[in-house]
Length: 185
Image (cartoon, rainbow, N blue to C red; front, side, top):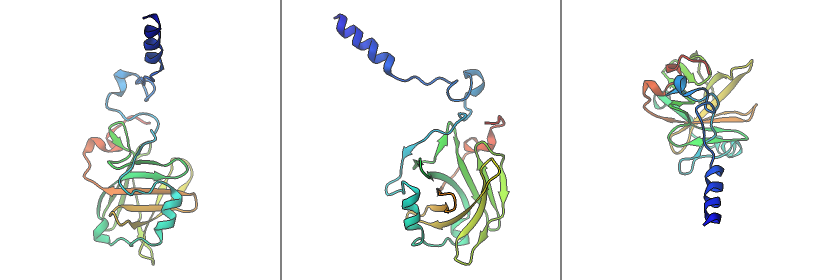
């Protein structure tokens, strides 16, 4: 009986417990606010690319997007790099998506956690790819080129730095947008 009691206590204290402080603050000031740091996710869609290397291999064989086909709201479902993060429902941090692109006929708006909302100039390259710049919060501006996958997701790569984004067209609620939260992350 004593041994069983000790095993239960040992097991109970081995389970990690996450506090609000770990996710970015005290309970009183963070209810419903996205955590301070990204949380790596691994919940891929069926046949979703899992690495930057796999994305590069397939990229040149993908279709170039039509202007009408990509107009709308796109949510990041994958960040492809050395430590990829995927979530078929959309990579999230708390209640908000990590990255949302609103693509219009002649415009592209970016709503990304830890950054102010931005509008950038997107261009159609001679190859038919969609290209746009994306600031990383530091001094760097990354140049992404995008094509459509067979699953009708948008795959965007910056080969120079070895980063990729996979985005899916989704309907997004206002509270799922990073710009809905006034606190800096």
